Length: 383
Image 1 (cartoon, one colour):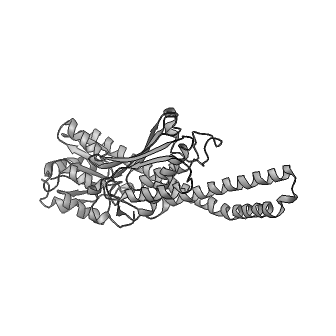
Image 2 (cartoon, one colour):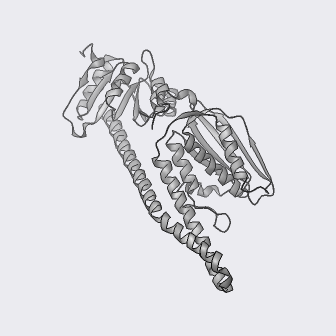
Image 3 (cartoon, helix red, strand yellow):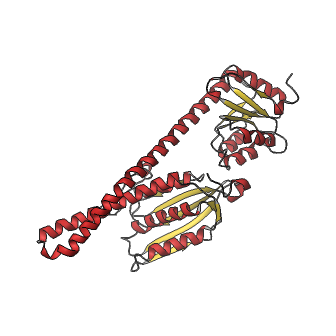
């Protein structure tokens, strides 16, 4: 029989890559069965019989995967999963629920909370090992993708930083040339110099957006409690001042507080509202409305406008760098703003998506975890 001190017991094995698995289950029989199955595939196993004990073990070393029982004392598996997925230190660890039956409601709830998979009891060895290996491979691919993003951030920053100084020099030189010598130019020469000036401005804008994109992906995040309504209002007024003659109806509902990085959230608001103002520019009366709805675990914000809209067939292109659905002659831009929004939200546990219809406007949606789901020790820490 398994030891009574199983909660503190750790099974060590000589394994390649040290594939660490944490089993959280209050049933000694279940723990022993799962452990015996996984031993065959050379996993390093740690065991906890309660959520609190599991949290203590997580302080020392993060596992590659967690096998989590639904029914436990003190805190059940659902609450423990919610706690982990809303804590930046643990949210990336794949969780496989161990459940006693094919209970569709429980399985649905597990996935809604962020679990990656489930296995029903009694366990079939081949199925358990296959599901664990699948999640380990997915986690590895995710890590590789994150590293690729980091390399992209570094590349964007390096290229943008190195190009910005000479581009600014070119921009200043052409500005001086037009200011001092324009009177001596022929009409064609003046037009050529003006085109060079315009293109230098465009390239400088692209460089600035590349730096913003890199900044959004690499900046340390400091989470604070924020009232988003004043941030949206301040940002709107700043952007509105650049186009004082426009007729715009801007309506913002009362919004719930969020936990977010203040600097990145301000940048998010700038990009969202800049987008809405740009694509409503051809409307005689522009309308922009901001609202929010709360689900069980997320706050879902919407920014709706009555602008140019877009064809939903191309919606998957919207959040890619340099992807545009409108020509430069219709609307200016670099195609980086929405990609920046997505990066900002992903780093804070949320995501962005859009709906729209040509000439009937678009709605920008974004989600962030509910403020109640944050553990106290996740606030004001770097993420």
